[in-house]
Image (cartoon, rainbow, N blue to C red; front, top):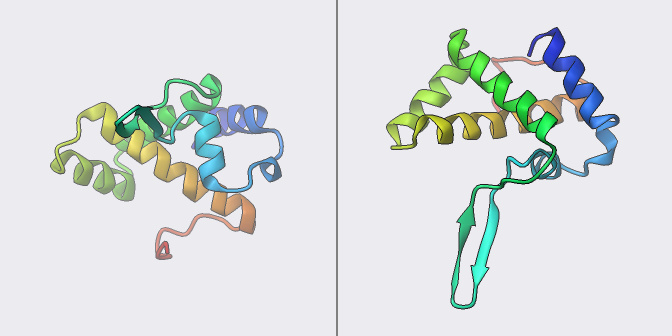
Length: 119
């Protein structure tokens, strides 16, 4: 994330401690799937709600990472495309992954290390 997106992220979330988990942050941004239930049918759908500014930050960050040829993000995006996902679906999946990484970094107060294997 660049300087502008980081500033927008900080302005949108305020204090990271208000989110109990990365899932809570993703839900606030509208990047977590929402369960659809109607009687006998149940499934998951894409969320259309959430904080639009926060969602834009993560989606723009994911798009920039793919177009600027960040090797880890590009590999994840390409893997999602090979799984049959459309461009938008792959970008949302990458944005969701970036939410988890960013939340973990801020909770642990550590910098990003691409060599560190995520659990």
